[in-house]
Amino acid sequence: MNITPLVWGITIAVTIAFFVFEYFAHVRKPHAPTIGESARWSVFYIALALLFGVGIGIVSGWTYGGEYFAGYLTEKALSIDNLFVFLIVMTGFAVPKIYQQKVLMIGIVIALIMRGAFIAVGAALIENFSWIFYIFGALLLFLAYRQAFSHGESDPANGKFMTLVRRILPVSDEYNGDRLFVKKDGRRFVTPMLLVIVAIGFVDLIFAVDSIPAIYGLTNEAYIVFTANAFALMGLRQLYFLIGGLLERLIYLAQGLAVILAFIGVKLVFHALHVNELPFINGGEPVLWVPEIPIWLSLVFIAATITVATVASLAKTRSDRLRRPVEVTQDIEDARDPRP
Image 1: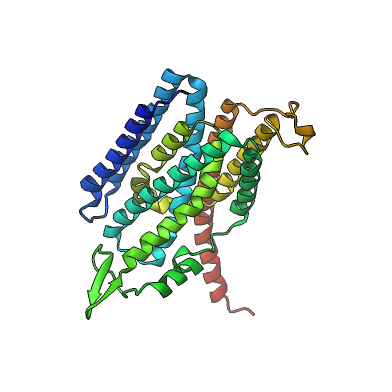
Image 2: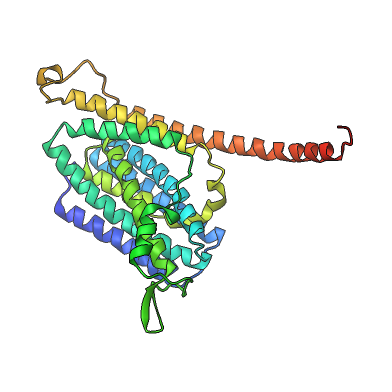
């Protein structure tokens, strides 16, 4: 792809414009969005992302279009995983629902800024050091293992990082609207709202570590990496309110994401072997017998994995819900049974 500075400038300006519009149209006045509002804007942003991918395919070729769609699907799935942690943070800090939009908006902007920095660093590393693909591949395989066997026991609201923040900053006991600072008895305190935003930013930093190497396993084009991330984050706020109840039912999403990360990790290692320059591997020559995984296979595999994880999760939670009344009835009957 030949992306000129003008195209980059327009893309970044339009992205900023969307977030400014979001703030003034939806977030500035505190309120809890309705299901209808969340659904309409979620559909709008998903449709916009798909149309952009079609545009890339028409203008730059469907190889790049396929890379964009594979990257967008991966980043969207990882962003939904973010929502699980956002939900834990919101619950841990007991954020009033009418202020959750503002927290999410700021958190998403922080995420995009951090990912932008990671994208720039990743592009520079890939341009100058082909062996970085080995590092990215190994990192994704490690993150896939951690994702598969984590059980959601970590609570960012009460972790070591937030404990340190509370020691450094004087924190008030209660919210004061959506204000970040408040004065009491002539002394300035930070409100829990600021702590929530700090926690969300810290979570975003952690998620950027697996997000950026993952999409660089699907494309080397920094423009595709940035736009796929931007579109994945757009509409994430509305999606939070739309599928808030559904999040708890996606019990196998973590395992599905682990499979995707492992797949991309293997793909990166295979690609690293194809462009190998390390002298202690095959004498510094490329290992050409290792297969290259085509983008169409990546796209199909990622879409199929997300579908299977979602369907299996919903089927399992539905089965558990149907079984629960039977178990409760049996417990009642056992309690009434006078026999020893």
